[in-house]
Length: 242
Image (tube, rainbow, N blue to C red; front, side, top):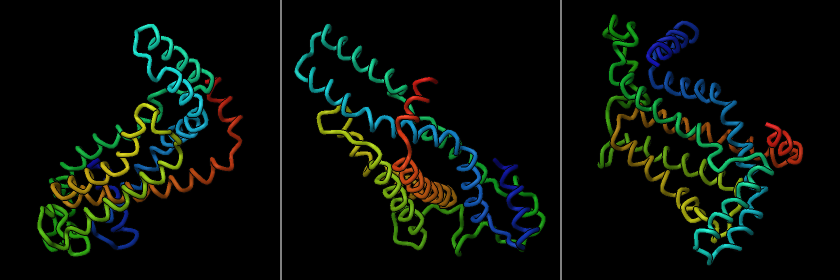
């Protein structure tokens, strides 16, 4: 990641005459989203298929709602597996893009903390101030105090909420569905977790998190429009074949 950041820094410097780590982070976020686009598209297809099969899952859940004996629970699991096989889906489908985020964040933390090591041009010229973004030091953490740095955690919360809310439109679950309450609560807990994280960590990390949520929201809007007009029968058939 440090090597990629150095390449982006030199690209902005040589092509546009801009020397700014904050813009490098935003550009890096965009590049990472483009690299993960095939995986993200698979996640979106999985979510859309789950939306179509959800009525059948809800029906099975209601059928075995008050049955807690082992035989009934095994029968319920068997019927649900048949539904997943029918649609070529999986209960864990679509988790990968979320999991990939965490090692990127951990590595990016060290890149930002040691930016002088990863971008030699900064160390060579002491007059450079590339570690500032809109006048804010990317190595500084906002903390629980009223400062201009709070704009990054606030933006992170807003973009995370918009992304989560838009994603919720791709799923339809009634309150009896297992995990329905948790799924709905995640729409609020994830933005809050993002806000707290961006307060505690350097704003360089928060900038990545905010930009990632913004790009995710834009992607989600485009995906929703595309799949709302797509032939789901063909998509489900292809998924079942795979």
